[in-house]
Image (tube, rainbow, N blue to C red):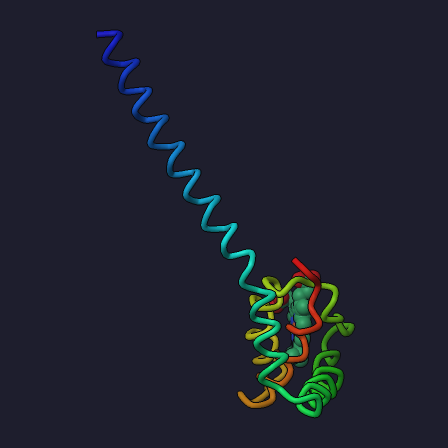
Length: 110
Ligand code: HEC
């Protein structure tokens, strides 16, 4: 009886271990994506559009709080915060996209 319990324990820990290993692998591959996102945006938007994005950002994003600079947060954090904040700032989709292009390309590495 004891042997069966030990065997089951071994099986369980093997399953748990492989699950954890899979998780680590998938977060590791995700970590590469944000910088690719930034370079894609840098290619897609012209310098003039980036400057416009910055101007909208400065004009619309310090009405309720201090202006948080792009470099203060990672791309991951900005991706979480921006949709909500662009809504709060009542930016239309076009303006929100320009702000996003400028913020993401200037975000903190990592
Ligand atoms: C209508 C008011 C309002 C406007 C306009 C606004 N924000 Fe915010 N912002 C908030 C509030 C309230 C919070 C804190 C609570 C929350 O996260 O909703 C916040 C939080 C944040 C945070 C999170 C800071 C942290 O430490 O986690 C960031 C970054 C941010 N705003 C950026 C922006 C940007 C960029 C814009 C312009 C697109 C913007 N905000 C426009 C109200 C606003």
